[in-house]
Amino acid sequence: MKADTAGKVSRRSPLILAAAGAIILVLLALLPMYIGLYQIQLLTYGLIASIAALGFNLLLGYTGLLSFGHSAFFGIGAYSVAFLLRDAGIRSMELYILIGLPIVAIASALLGYICVRHTRIFFGILTLALSQVLYSLALKFFWVTGGTDGLRVARPTLLAGMLTFTGAGSYQRFVNSYYYYVLGVFAVCVVLMWVIVHSPFGKALQAIRDNETRARFLGLRIRRFRWASFLISGTFTGLAGILWVPLNGLTTPEVLYWPFSGEIVFTALLGGFRNFTGPIVGGIVFTYLKTYAVATTEYWQLLLGVVLVLLVLLLPTGIVGAIAALAGRLRGKERLA
Amino acid sequence: MILLQTVDLNKRFGDTRACDGVNFVVNSGEFLSLVGSNGAGKTSLVNLISAQLTPDSGRILFAGNDITGTSVYDRIKAGIARSFQIVNLFDWLSVFDNVALSIFSRAGKTARIAAIADSDQDVRTEALEVLGQFGLADKSAVLAGGLAQGERKLLDVAVAYALRPKLLLLDEPTSGVSTRDKGQIMDTVSSVVRAGTVTAVVIEHDMDVVFRYSDRIVMMHEGRLLADGTPEEIRANSEVASILLGAPLSS
Image (tube, rainbow over all chains, first blue to last red; front, side, top):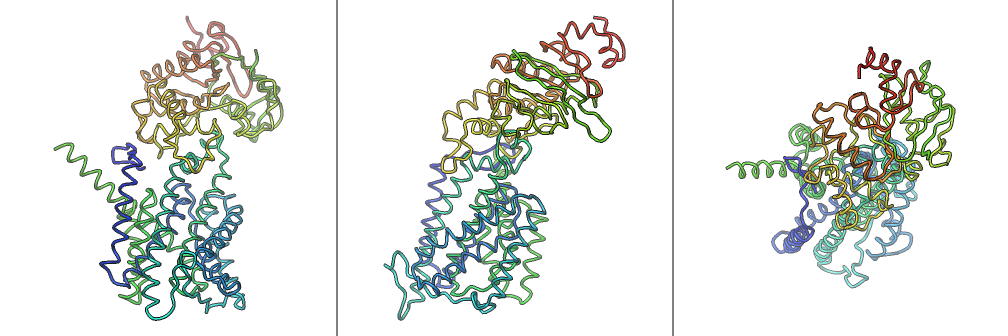
């Protein structure tokens, strides 16, 4: 749901939305037939980034809390997988998710309990500080975490061991199969998040974002709602970390470092944090943008910085927000004509 | 029957006594206006009753229970709702959602995470009914931030009313709107409140509005209750007239 230029709220039928979603899903499923292996891999990274941004945006776009520490949850998800493989010998992707999700949920609940006692800049600084504590631990406890070398993660089995990846051509088969695996998880995440933000709970979060005082005088327990939002947000981002590490094959403390949190913020801003689809689009676009920026120039951070400045100045509502505004204007012109 | 009673309620801000031993009584079912010049302590009294402020001393009794130390949440659950002097809405939510949230909160449904809010037919019906009562049904899909000031004031009251409180505290529901809109707002508010058998305490500066709609008027001055009576009694009170109007009322 979003506002058009006339300030009206457009309520699209869930059936129409489901049909549109199904068409996009089918198109994404057909895409590997027409693109190369590298592009499939990039798109998989993009979908994972979208899941992370979707979770992050529950906190920013729907609860009004800007976290600079979401790398913590991504990193906890990634390291959970690495530890499960190294210390428990687990190689099943389903077990990584089933065991990893409660771990990131517990971490999110604990960090959230501390952070949601504050708002605005204090909240942002707390999330940043706590994530950097985890980064330091990952860096210094190298006998546990592998330090800067990180931990290697071998290709897992998929679908309860039905798909294994060994022998000749296993890498290609893994990338292809993993794309569909991530696409499936991505679809589930999108549906789940859509239900959450359109539920009474989601509306309450938006009310708290808009006007905390009034929300309190509606009988909403502000801190509990913020904590629940933080927990869900962190868990989604942690799931992205769990999905990312088998594809990347390695996790290092870099995924816990603050610039990675900045990238998640960038992703949400790029797509637009005031609408549901913004972070999804942002995740995919940012992945391509960063990949090609890195390939084009060694000053890729400068390039991304310029994009961020231009984005804030020219497209403050992000790509999706700008497209929606443009579509609204065109509809307005059609009505006048 | 007494619904709300404050006993020797005190609140100071530095050297200023916002409430100075206030013994304030609200009876069930009445439409009471709280008047007084700026700084008289009206909003402070409402803030104390709604738990936005905590008193330095004194007690607040509601429906026979001592609620002095209770939280905002507890007072809302007890049946006290309020609107604000400066409109407090959820500007990025629709008019419908603003009211629906009050109903979800009252019904204890705001923790529902796996259900679509719009598909709750009971809430939908009630929200549209409340919006209809306040003349806002045709604006239900508009963002609250896009309403005109008079409509925002009405929605502010509707959001509080949708909590179905026993006591509704309205802090200047007509401030900042045109004279024409004032009458419209007060007609709507008073008819809805009276039809819903809600007790209302209204802070108001416009004495024409106060005399026209109130069952009882309480006047505050420098943190104390100065006068308490029917509109006729207050109209005849020369002390009130001299403080509020600077001269006695002729009629």
